[in-house]
Amino acid sequence: MIYEHRTYRLRNGAVPEYFRLVESEGIAIQRKHLGNLIGYFTTEIGPLNQIIHIWAFEDLADRARRRASLAADPDWLAFLPKIQVLIETAENKILKPAPFSPLT
Image (cartoon, rainbow, N blue to C red; front, top):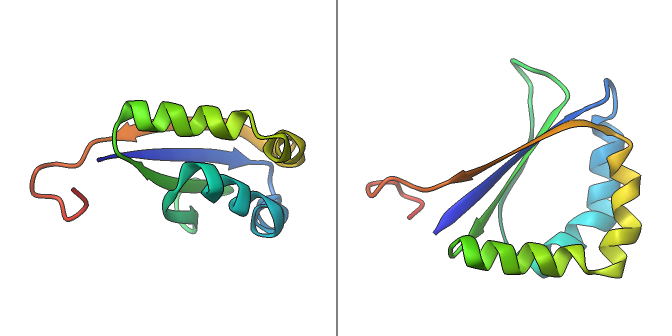
């Protein structure tokens, strides 16, 4: 199992609009393709205006297949510009749990 940890820094004040859009349209599309959502978060302390979402995949091949499926979905392609204007930077990490992690 691997975990994709995505962090977006949004424009100042854009978090409520981003969450509104994702909740009303985007999350259903993402779940349809990406599957196992571990969590969706925003920062309270430290760097502000950040969104973090974590998805679980069997391995890198599973992730690549699922991300390609999402990228080809016309509903996702229509939705994406709505949130892209709110995002200033994006960072992506692939996390591999330690053997003793409860998330293995």
